[in-house]
Image (cartoon, rainbow over all chains, first blue to last red; front, side, top):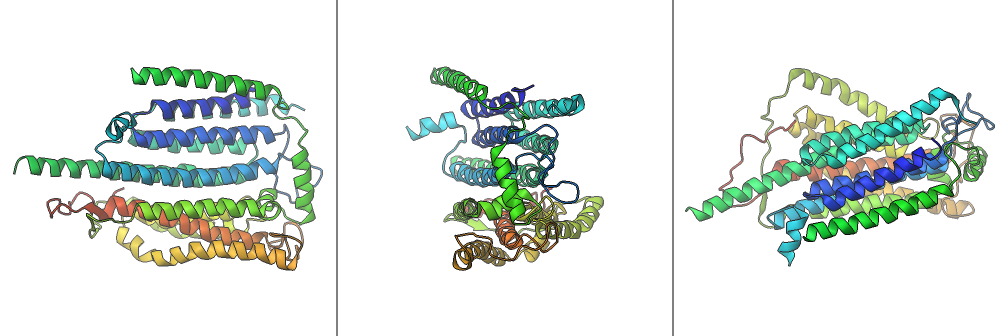
Length: 115
Length: 97
Length: 258
């Protein structure tokens, strides 16, 4: 269990990279890239987790001395998700442009088209 | 230090679900189906975030990863489909005038 | 042949990547441990500024400059998408009619959910410093709520309720507001993005100093960005067609896609 969360993070990232490399369709490639990026969310949150820790929102129930999980990695993950959406949409806009200019959106055949 | 068997099982199950979801997204080769699977994967991720005590992150994941990104993917697939159909129509018209 | 060679390279790369990751994870503190030095420092700083939501405090107070850069990434991506997806030469814009059939229950659900979503989004932004939520989440929820109208099959209504010019200005205004708040921190306080407003009582609605203001600025930018993003893609799908001498007339099949 100690390293299971880290292993899942690495596996998700590997799966995403594998998908990018073997993809037959550029839209599929972009989605796989966002899967690879989601591996970083798992890793960041796994690093910041503490058994018995509560969510880092203070109030009547969570005080200064209550154990909380690490809010720093959560803030990083939050911005990570927003950046991932920005990257995905930008890449999909490029894919639409490629579809307009070329006959195909299969990366293998695109390489041959460009020569 | 370890927070009970139940908490451990919950974390392990949610992590496994994320792993299975990622594999499902990657190995769904048809993009229009992949968009739906991606949306489900977004839900699985946000469940894991809630289990790992990150409600802020879960909220933004459910809004972005489950709604906005799959919608953009679906719209792109549809646009590419339309482009392909238009091109076929144009090519057919030029070859047989 | 080329594909199999590529798969071989990929396999080698992934194996090395996995080995390096395993090596790195062996040096990490175990999952769920209780030593989190950054957590301790961040919690102390959060309490120092009387902010209830530590994540908001880190994003908008303790590392405000980072978030500014991150918001600029979003801004630039949206500008890039809008530039890539605008109608170019050889394309024309056609009228979109609400001709598709939409289940009445769907329409009803949309009309019930639309105001609820708007209120929820405002709530999420306003309480960003106190409860989970904030500018990023609230902005996305708000823009998603606006696009519920599209699911209800009312593209024309969406068109009227969404004056794009406002959102273009709203996006820029949000970024400018964020930067201005940062510079105000430098002018009245110690450094860029310093929290200069009195911070009040922890977990009060008005507390945490500049954090709610940053939340509003980010909410404006994110909401406008996502609206512009989605409208660019929607326009491409519904309204913009290649111009081929009128051969591809407006098809009746693409009115309101659901």
